[in-house]
Length: 312
Image (cartoon, rainbow, N blue to C red; front, side, top):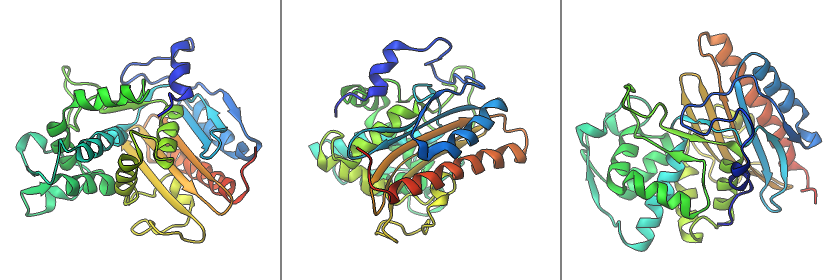
């Protein structure tokens, strides 16, 4: 995949940016925008003024033109959204034969509360493709940790680097508690790079078309349409087929004080790849609902954008 603009721009880091895990820059709000995203900029700006760290990117999938860029080189925690990188490596190893239909044993080291179904199932072993399906569909924490233990975090990192993904990283397994010797966050990313990764998947350019299609197949099952994609009006449990001319792949990451989403939305007029991250003080339900409302505002304008022909 061609090196993303966001990755190249990371070498010219802005003053105040923090590229390590857990850097939460507060109240910063700058960037450029297509005139169709005025309400998104206003909504994210209000969160930034309230102390949140905001970052957003929307790219026309066909042309690569940036439609929205709000602090899109800012590296922030993205909860389990780094599982996209894990699935890319799993797909690559399935395609080149290093992984087959291997059955992985559910191990105590891989357990963690949170999202997913495997922890509630009776089956103690599952094939690698089935575990990848659980990760794509539900962000399954046990399945994610089992796959990460199998392919290795170094392989995930090396694959990302080979694709020109420099600042998006899966840096740790899912944990119930993070001690002083653990990474402060499971994964981090700038939204500009995340949006380019999603665009690369849509174009079949991440490793190759076969790998990209495997990853998109898993992610297309994702059932969390609570954030940006909550404005698309689609069935969260069944949205792989075209529905009113729309087709979405949306991946979310959520933890205390973090809401993130990356996706691809194809519509009657055009297709866009997008990503957004908000880190915020999660001390009250009111603050959390304000974040969700802002992300749904972005979703409304993303939806409007794909109903209009792409601007050249």
